[in-house]
Image 1 (cartoon, helix red, strand yellow):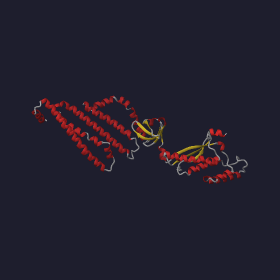
Image 2: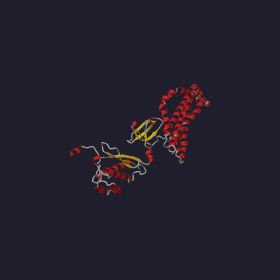
Image 3: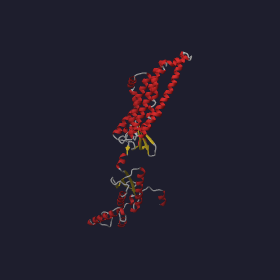
Image 4: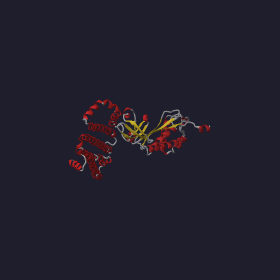
Length: 411
């Protein structure tokens, strides 16, 4: 450095001007040197690391590259060069050296914080692709860690810039605890809720949940520290506070998905005036229905034996025991449901009567399909009721419906 000063003075430059000219020359040399250093690190070292990573079979190291961990880390090299050369370059301006070193330290701290955040993103990606943590709300935990890193990193950067000990800022944080609790109230409540949801296995990513209060009915696509996002069936997205899943009720359909069946629970309303006892002619016709042929023959023989043993007067059908068209239809409907290959016969399957109403006698089909996809499920249920509604007139029954204009025109 002294040689450069003497050389400039020897050229006829004044001593004061030589100091500033020397600084300009050294800064230019420093710029070239940091540029070359940055180029070597990025073009040689980082490329070599990438080529090695591509040859490996593991996935997590590819995530390190995708999250730019090495690229960000390379920014430290020029900063280190500046840090080491500053005392020599600014020897004539020694008062500026501490401030420049503070700025460099703050810059290096900022780069390291970004590297740590990118590394956490890589860890999250790795855990999300492992079976053990796949369905856990990892976003909540990683967001909390990131907040802590940002706070600690911010304090370290301020300590470099203001030349204060980090303990000074941490003690100030203690006095601001109440304010911080108010600022991060939702974050803290979301974190506690995330722990409860995870510990009790109440909700996972991919679950179908319903929360009518918020207009949510669909799949959970994202869980983080403060919110849970649900993609509804109409492809809209509802964002709900995480703590709402603890403080309020919601329906999780995961149990249905894991059971191997999806419930079908729907009724046919039969017009009560069409219900009657079966005549012998009706029974002979019903015996031609393959699904209930054996049932009618067996039941008819038992009823015939009962009526003979008790000497029942058959001139009136109300006497003794007789089959009804609604009873035979119910047996037919149950037999039809059970032979359907799309019905899970290992789960509850029945056809029952409900309480008569002003709209007739409800015949309810209560069973479970073995297909759970919405479109397929609706198709199975529709095909089933298409057939049953069409079969009702074959039993001399009528499906109830309110009269329309066409009905009044016929009258």
